[in-house]
Structure formats: structure tokens, C-alpha cells
Image (cartoon, helix red, strand yellow):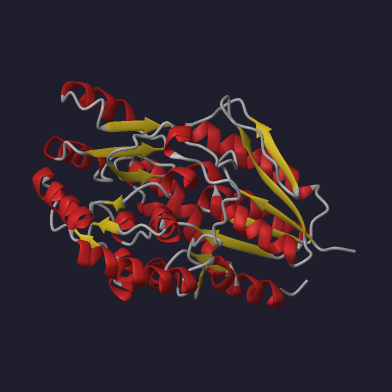
Length: 372
């Protein structure tokens, strides 16, 4: 009989590629998987090889959402036929921990960021305190721990003296069976495309300044894929600057469809600002999506991002977020032929080494050590 793993996360499962890769790997290891998330009004259908459950909640944001979700999740876990619980991020940990203690079931915890350092709660001291208290109570008692990069692992090690395994959010090798043309994707055909993408087009990601840089790049299209809290502001600013023909917005989409777009870009940008501890040590998913699409990268100098780009020599950096400076670096990346030839060659090594088949080894090793 297969051992059953219940994997939980608070999102609607549609765009969470890390969780999807983990579930796929666990399925290949012959575990019976059930992935639990939530249903949103705009949630799109899922097609997975394992069981999924999306709970419909009364509340969709704020403290009442987190309370309702964890209460509902706790009872699902408590009465489930499970061998292992796998919690993703601090907002699912309380329910998982309580259920695992009551039922004496092993708990795996995968923290995708330094949760109490996220910018959304830095100006909410009570909210931050509650999450920190939950973390301080539970974290020291955890045995099977993952996170997304060495810097965040070091932060948790310093906080709780727990050792975390590092499993970066690196994609599988991308194979598009039916590559689409720019025309099919409704992309401009005659100019270079610069892309940014992701689930969080939010403040302090440098997107506002990148948009302003388009004033100095009349022959470049800036493609923004995803949703977030600055999208409406960006759209208004695009109209104010008369950049409607140079800036293109597309909402979040299926991963394969997103990568259809990414492969047509000439440059990928990731310009997060060092405004909080979570961004300082971030290693964005899109960095690896760009690599596997074979496009060079323009990035801000964040520790983990800089390490990857310098190791493989596959892009340039900005020194500040002044729009003119960003524009000049974009222009250099697009027009310097010798640099582009070097990046094209180096990208092959990066793709060979930075892929999920290498990264998932830590997952397989950890699950092999779980005492059931």
C-alpha cells in the first residue's frame, strides 16, 4: 500500500510551480499525494495526476481568512488517511503541526521565504507578532525542513539553530511541444521584448522604474505577465506616458503558456529592491525561468541573484533604480553582440546544472530518511 502525503498551501494551486514540482517528484517516488489549497472566484481548472482539493472559504483575506483556513485544514488533516503531512510556509504550519502532534504523524515543512520578513506585514506589528509567536513555538520542534536558498537557511539557523535543506525553486527542463509564434501570442513582431513575470507584480520589485525606462527605449516592448498590487498603478502610468504601444500587460496564466511568451523575449529582468530582509535574500523563480528560456538577465544586485548570474556569466546588473540607468543597461544588453554571444554559450551550462532533476535530490533524500 502506498504511503500517503497530504501537501497543503494557502494559494489556489494554479500557479505554484514549486509545490507542483514537489508533488510530481513525490508521485514519481510512489507516494499517494493529495494537494490541498483553496478555491478563489477566478480560480482556473486544474489537471494533475494526483488528487487535489480546493476549499471554498467564507473569508479570502486578512486574519479571518488565515484563521478559517487553518481551522478547516486542521480537521481535514485530523481525519485524513495520511502517512506524512507536508506544510508549505508559515500560514499552513499551525494546522499541520497540531494535527501531526495529535496523530503522531511526521511533518515536513517547506518555507518558501523568510516569512516574518515579508514586506506586507512590516507595518502591521500585531500581525507580525502573531506569526512570529507561532513560528517561535513550532519551528524549534521541526525535524524535516526545507527552504529556497542558502541565505534564508542561514537566517533560520541563526534564529532557531535548526538546519534546513536547501531546495531552490528551479524548473524542470522545459519542452514546448507546440511552440507558438509571436502572432499567435499577440506579441509585437518587429521589436525586442523585455519581460518580467511572476505571481507578485508588487511594490519594491523595480517594475515602476523599469516602466519609466521605456520612455528612453522607443524600439523596445516591455511585457509584464502576472498580477499584483501595483498593476493598476502601472497601467495608469503607461497611459500617462503614452506608452501603450511599448508596454504590454498580460494576467497570470498557466506556466506552459507563460513560458511560450518568455521564449520570445530578448531579455528578462528581475529588479527587486533591497528594502526588506525577504527581498534582500530572495532568489526569484523567474530568474530560472529566464535561464531555461535561454534569455540573458538584467538584475539588481541581491546576494543570491548576483551569485547565480556571476557564477554562470549570463547577464548584467543595475547599480541603482534610476530609469535612465535601467534604460542604458537594457540597451547594452540588447545591442552588445559580443556579450550576447558569450551569454548564449554560457546559458547551456546553466541549463544543464540548474534544473529540477538535480535539485529534487534533496527532497528524495529527506523523504528516504523519514521515520514512519
